Length: 161
Image: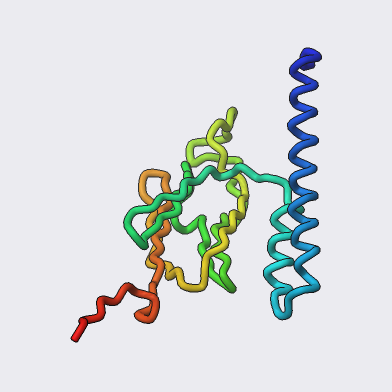
């Protein structure tokens, strides 16, 4: 059990987090009647605040160039046939295909320190981001993406006559 000062600090942090979440949802709810056709976006933001935080598997978001990004997911013990990667309606989803057996190729596992449980991790990606590919190497899944900038939005130099 936590000592009183630490318990009070934790309770204060949790209260602030709940208040921040309620404030964010209040802002979204105030904007909803002022917009048309954005229901999916508001539903998505509300679902982000309703879902408890899941920390498995751990991941990194890495910017590898001006318009290039990688999502790196730590998947020790998984191979590429155990993982499914899908993209639909602006959501990139990485999911394990099924539960991993409790038996190892050499026998029954006595202690399982390397987690191979079922997971599903989703990322929201913008419409102008293109998924270039995925690679699983040394227990790290790397999904490469690039933001495609249309010609109309690129910097143009105009000659003066």
